[in-house]
Length: 61
Image 1 (cartoon, rainbow, N blue to C red):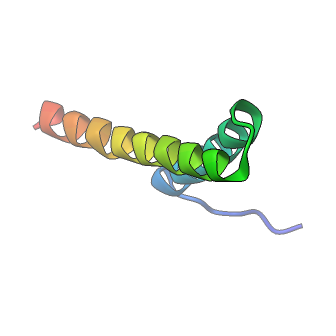
Image 2 (image 1 turned 135 degrees about the vertical axis):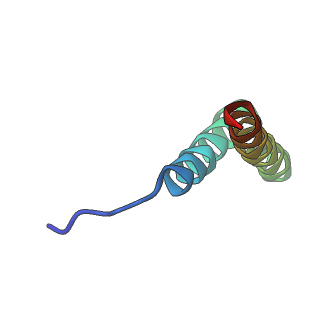
């Protein structure tokens, strides 16, 4: 079976997507609430990944 060669960024975004889907499905009752909450969580995760990435970039000069 071939290995997937994902970068750190791609792996982080994939993890954010999977976690957001699980959180949306398990915490809300209706489909519209699940979708809205999942997208909101995904946005927070992606924003955090890029925000922390910039902080590390600026911190290392």
